[in-house]
Amino acid sequence: MDDYVIKIENLVKYFDGRCILDGINLNVPRGCIYGLLGRNGIGKTTIIRILLGLDFPTRGQTFLLDNDSRNLTSKIRGKIGCVSEGHNLVQNYKVSRLIKLCKGLSLKWNDEFFEHLIEAFRLPLDRKVKDLSMGMRAQLNLALAMAIEPELLILDDPTLGLDTVARRQFLELAIELIQKEERTILFSSHILSDVERVADRIGILSAGKLIVDCTQEELKNRVKKLRIIFTGNPPADLYMTGIVNQKVDGRELVLTVANWNSEKKAILETFQPSSCTEIPMTLEDIFIECTKPNVELVPAGMQEK
Image 1 (cartoon, rainbow, N blue to C red):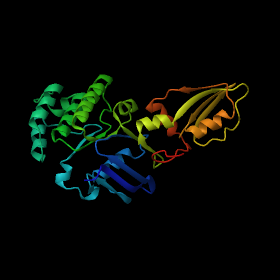
Image 2 (cartoon, rainbow, N blue to C red):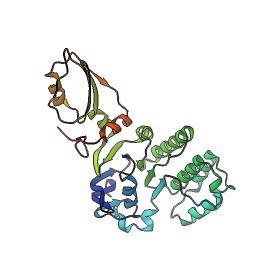
Image 3 (cartoon, rainbow, N blue to C red):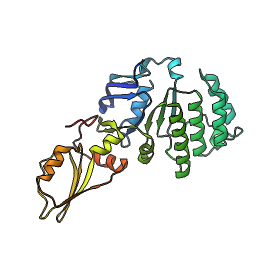
Image 4 (cartoon, rainbow, N blue to C red):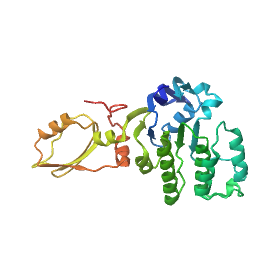
């Protein structure tokens, strides 16, 4: 069996003559929690729809669990759980009826595990789905997705619209379930603090390209924000690649650099700054910097030496 649960090869997608995805290559290892990030409309949900066989690429191929996305069998689909934005469940069904429907359509169903989740969530079986709060619908959706004991769980903005408490509860349970079973997760979200809490690897989409594909630890090591003080005015040109942003205030230069390494550090030292301190960055800080127009990041993996 392949070590990659998700494989994307040279994926290109056009909508109305506009290129949305431009040669995406991506492999998600088994047991990984992969955070897929990008600004609104950048193509995250399009990638997920293509992976699930709900849309088709203009060029390229995608694979789930060693199977071409265009020909997913019911057996393979039965190994994939999905929780998506909006939790579009059958609104007029009572919760009990929806559960019966989903159970009947599933190739595998863990009754004991599902009952544990329903009890933990305190979901009312006699109420219609449309009468549940957004948080309850999210919990019901997660419970239905996990009841089939999926090898792959796809979370597409699952906490969008939830308040802070409901979002934290959802994530804590999702993390517990994921870690217990060592499942592979593709997690796309606009709430970057959520992704930061759970993801092993990070992918960032910008302008149709996958500009980052690496572990979260590596990303934080390779993108640095520095506060540099000089004895006189800062130099007009640092002769350094990968400068994402810079701001001068008197003798102070605040510099954000992508693909930070020992060579760039040595270049900076030739200007003999009087001090250089690192400013801590969250995943959200890095994302905002990396997706600014004209940022020159090394695509995927950030392997610049």
